[in-house]
Length: 473
Ligand code: VG1
Ligand code: CO
Image (cartoon, rainbow, N blue to C red; front, side):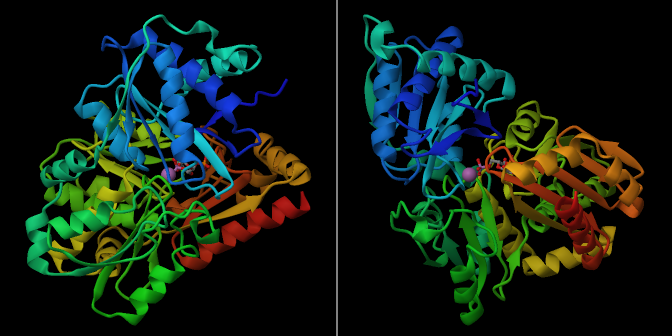
């Protein structure tokens, strides 16, 4: 039987009223409660519960809190929609036993979901979600979910984690340098949980700013709250028109991803932002350790690490793996191609808010645009151009995609790779540092084709060759 509740790359996600409903919510929360009670350090155990601005977010969150209370677990329920990294921050700062966020992150408005953050503050690891998943699906079949209620009920308290999170950023970001540069910024939270965060930070620190999409709209203006080039068209147009704006900072539905727009209104793909910030963090921060990136992320990071004699850790896709490396102190900076990053000392979770601020700090301190900073990197380590294409999958194309990945002899014949890596999908290492990766998404019904070549044309050629193979397979 197919499992209804599945934790993908980050959390369980489903269409509202279809696979995400009160029954699947209750079952998952009961499972999380059981899981947490087994290791909780607080007595009674204490979890934070938050939500993003999607349809019924506050209702599902309240329900989750009630279910946790029946287990004798105390809950800090956020007073409004809250970014995943802010919840992560609060868990660590207050030594909570973990958190639950009702969010489907960057998925379209018809979806919602559940992200679980254990006490270490990062996205739950596969071994953690595996147990929760199997318990949750088991509970789905049980008639009365509330039958196991404890005698002693837990309490729910409304909490606003925003001020403490914003205050902590003073220790991570050089706001003095930002203020001195006197730049003007544009902010676009895409109607997501980041609403009000970068705006308040700019107000507090006297940074000139203009904002888009700050109201609550569960339809996200009719698109998915994913800060990619297409969804940031309004931000790009605004910046192309107003030459006084130096940088555009966007975040996704739960504000763990970033999107950056350069002075001229050009979207900068996250890989390039990661390259620029790797160099910037290694030169400005006095931290010892390597760099972390997912298997799908630019190898410019490897070249930068080599320049600084630092190590690079490659992980499967999913920030949980990078979060762990940060927690273990192995890396000082880690990032993902999809627009995720964090630094040591900050949360072991991707954070779109600190990402925007780090770029702003880099621009302020160097007095160069992101585009120029990237040119500097190219001069230092040579060029690499990354890109990604998502292919929608129906039954037939899924079968073809699986065939290509499971028996990659066709790929080998076509590309003659130097080596093959099957850690997450199939990655082909090619001459001169170029590579191609094919993998199935764990958050959407798509196959992702990633490539990185020494020239734009090379990258695009790889992607179209794989697309062609998928069509004719
Ligand atoms: C995608 C991204 C991955 C990210 C994950 C969760 O996963 O590729 O980098 O960590 O989403 O992001 P996948 O399996 O669909 O490629 V979020 O902002 O939706 O929590
Ligand atoms: Co997200």
